[in-house]
Length: 295
Image (cartoon, rainbow, N blue to C red):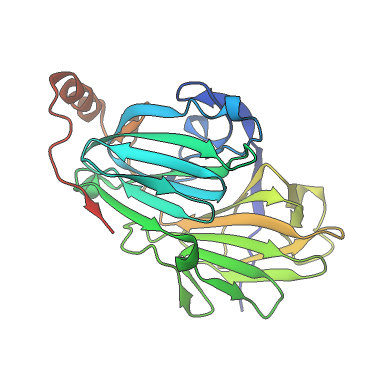
């Protein structure tokens, strides 16, 4: 018998600015470590005001983490110190393993109407993999499978498996799932999760209730646009749309690392000594010393 995960805590995304002044909403971050382990941070950069995002995220370093960018609308141009360059388009995703070190920039462009809708998630790397060579997994819109579940939900699979269908992002050490779930009004969604994994949802439209039992299905188990839900123990997630509109949310899970964190801006290591060494290499010009892998 499955054990439905309860809602452990909810988090309202909060406005902040990053990069060269990009207006975004921080879903969770430094203050929530280690609640979301192995996930470090998530940002919601949806906007219909180009002046709020077009200055972008100019050249900056990363080491010890992975950044996951998922776009619903608009384009983001990216380039890096290894000579890679390209565009992440609407419906596309990019899973970048920074590993031992990369310097890159990300410049949101928006669409023809001046709208950008996207999310970036930071995933920690275990100590044994923090100095791995950088790697990209870029996924186009048509490479992301769409599954219509028997319970009525529609699921885009960036990483993980739904009803035997696998997403295109593979070979990630924390074994994550990253799903874009739409639950129509009057429908529900059930999905198995590994009991040992950290699991959260981030609602991006409508309102969802994450409780199967109507007795406990009240405001504390429901979330609307801009709210993250961190689940407790169990092996199953249940969600249903609230009201007469569909609910849409990102569902993310991964294996927690349980390792010490030394976090300095865009670099996340295990010790302060490693962190100091990384910033010294930046100063010395020796920070990037491996060729990246791209697919």
